[in-house]
Length: 179
Image (cartoon, rainbow, N blue to C red):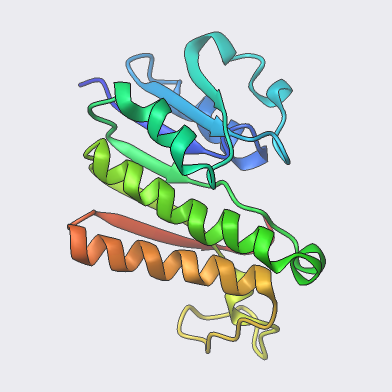
């Protein structure tokens, strides 16, 4: 099996750190983690820290991201988990959420182009459905972004779709429910 390189944003978080562990089961895989540690914890990566490239960086910091990724010519998979989550704080500080969840996603998409990623996986949110009338909620349900968090995650999803179509980036968007 050929060596694959993965970039995981938000890789020190709950989902991200488990994903890092799983990817490293194949010893040929290389993992790069970008996390600002606002929600994630280094302790989540303690068993694999010496096996990964870890960068403490906020994804909304385009200049720092560009400097970090100058040395990488090729990354096979980008898994974009990093985001500010939670509804109430997004109401109090919508700009902070926009900067992270929309501008940050745009920055990661640009990095994906730069490193010629084969696949971009975006972790979206079921919050884009608002408060659904029917459970389980179908992917075809009406989009109702009632709060800034939901709106920014949905805008990120639209960016990924748009960049995929315009720049021929193979992408998948996953709308997670109650992780």
